[in-house]
Image (cartoon, rainbow, N blue to C red; front, side, top):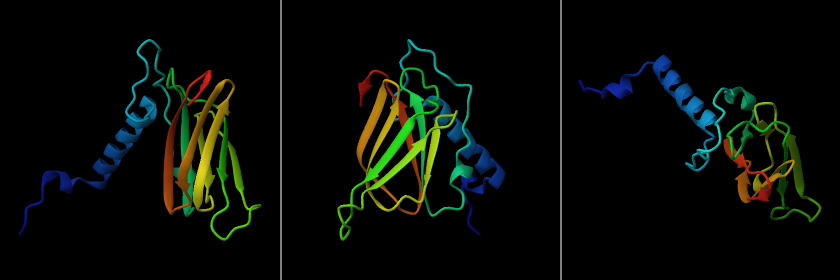
Length: 154
């Protein structure tokens, strides 16, 4: 009979509690590249987004959470644009443009984007974030924690 380490004997409820605690810590802290919010600004830590049900029942999903860089507060009603250039064997008119809007919690979802290399741009008043070379469309959920700075382009 082999003896398993204690951590492998966790109950499903304990494992779920641990996973939810980690999700809560990531969502409320802004969760971007290990960067902490500036200490001069208050940090919004009184909200939580339940993310997993938003992508249930789809093959591929993009799930983004947009927060303000200065305060880590959710950015509601930000415009999200995903653009995919034509892939091999596709004509020049086969560019894919997907648009979404963040909800009151700063969350947006895109279900089943066509596979390919995307450019993502997020706009809210004076703040802009743009990322090039984002690979999307594979099976599973792609999570994008995004910090939106005001008055500039990242």
